[in-house]
Image: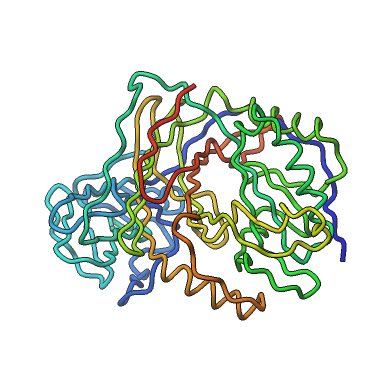
Length: 420
């Protein structure tokens, strides 16, 4: 059934970064593990009295946070430095740090080194305040180094727009959007401004789709029908009747709004068997708070496209999203916080993936919900899309998140910062 989104005028916002806390995000999904629940009965409903005899602020007015400068460490090598803050104040005295079993830890200078591989849970208490938990993962293999910066003094980075086409092979109307995108990106100057991905999150006419992925990402992007295209995770539309020049104009406008604030992204990925480590380093082009996320992409998936079989290029699906690693909280996909950065400064996030697990879960979901079992991946057809998000305000002063910049890179190699 044809289901077209209402077509709204494109919002072009003046970008203004605002603050957001954390380097290991306390809101990220927590992996299963032994007793990661902490007691909450130490936090009274009313203000208490601190050790210094002074009345403490209402706990609802301030938030105790614990963050780490690393989300992933190599055992017996890397040191993670923890920081505890109450509001805007960094705390050093009177803080107790606990593990996931609620044991108080002895961490001189709030530094942690893992002796064994695994997930380590940390939370902190101070006076009547209790923080959320964070996770630091420890692995037994070296973490890739950040690629050398070809222009250390520059923040004039190449800018790209992340476009995600929500589609499915059973959708007879989707070829209209595919043709529109195909024609618009035939101009190399326009295509150079875009990273195009395809999220096959729908099933239409009960047709099996070998690229099907079960996720809530489409709901997050406001997708209610197919085809839909999303720009930079904050603007979606389903109008495929526009002209090629109009689509190119939309891309140009989205591109131009962030050329002066687009962050740099450097990636070093290492594939060992089916274990994939991806180190992403963000370099700020403007003061602000940043998040980072990544897609695992597969090209060359063959499946006959409903309504488009007369054009054979439509039956080979490229840029297919196989895995999304940017979800934190309940249903937010803006990525994991790497903290507040001043212009020119950097921060890291490391993704740790098992391709066998990704394909096993994807194949199971495909079989259960999509009536199709994922084929084995072809290593040469896999690549990465790494993106950075930050916040901005529209003309009415409303705050929203958007993709600040995005790059494509191999699953086993280096991609340095890309400058204009």
